[in-house]
Length: 570
Image (cartoon, rainbow, N blue to C red; front, side, top):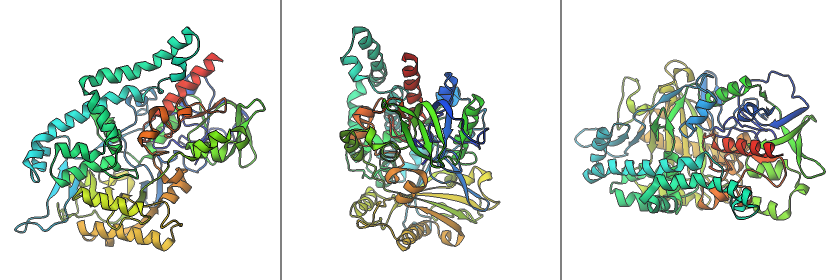
């Protein structure tokens, strides 16, 4: 993970990377200065606070990085798509000026079927994009009723997702402040109710629908709207992506909402490829931060957060023995890494430590990065000339013929076994971005579920790792014969690998499960929902905080606002 507080920009964390990450190049200085106002980044620096960013790895960005794993092949090794990064952050930091470029995808979803074609025709497939009429024609292959209902469903979902936006860009309601203290302080704290009121006003009479979708199994919602299995399964993937849950479990509705509430270039719910890979986000943030005077350092592994005799944070100690003093320390690491690995345990109460130990980091994800020497050719949409078709730019959903396939894959993992027919999301960003692979070759991302952290209660063996990857490739081969022969190299990242390399506790890409008991006022714990820790001057700013995971930036933005408010008061 990153330095002391982690360092990561997680899947995007804003400019306030912290004690740990951001992204960019080596710092202007060969070594950190001995004194800073804060170990954070751009927004604080803009606010007049001298800041520094410390990254443990040689490459900046935490989980939002680009790495050349095989010669000539550049991968978004962990996070791989952009949508949730808040538009005001892109504007405020002028990220486009600093090099951020995103390739829009249209169509955006492709679900081929494993079936025999009729009268020599290829197997059916479902392709969805921005054109509503085209979507209806695609859905009508499976159900005329669903084709008719789809426009109303997307409009309904967009309304619910749009209502969340006021909650993303502000800390949760200050309940203690509203309830206690002087009248002046209570009135000031009451301002934190405004985002909730704005959300409610946006929802209007849809408040009950909003409550239902954030608490219900996504299948309860989808089955009310649709009847065709391929459509329901394709939509249900957004309800379980990155989460150890099934479409039939309560809370999966919110996970879907979380993944459709973003936007790119003012297109609601759109996801795109960052030019040069996801490291392009982190590099743009680093350039913005450096332009404001932030010092950024790589290969600075934080050993411990320093706590003064009065119980406040006073800086960090690096593993090389260097000590850096600071008035404020922000950690972009997971809450577990921050409080169990980096903070002196004597500075924390036993009750708090027990609470931290109870945070759920269960992950179902294995990420496989694949270098290929030719484009996959799908039976359901053949391209024999080797040239990309519109479907190649999509998120390609394999093993999504029915919801039952997803349910079975989930149940196998909960029993301690990797799925024998895993849910697969394939993306091929080099179809739109030629900078990622040599001519004629491509980089393929396989985001797979479900794999447990332990196999039958023990660690994975190297044989089991390769066997699972072989299983994934065997399934891809059924949809796109010749895929296995095209493979030049593969990088298999099980949940323990995601933890070891990127600091993602449990391999959880969200810095903690996005379950109802770990959202908003309870993210990551009720006592930590305002980004402040029990250690004065130590803050959380990563995806483990509200509003949660994704290359979003909101946790860092909100944490920076909190820090600046505290510094102003004191």
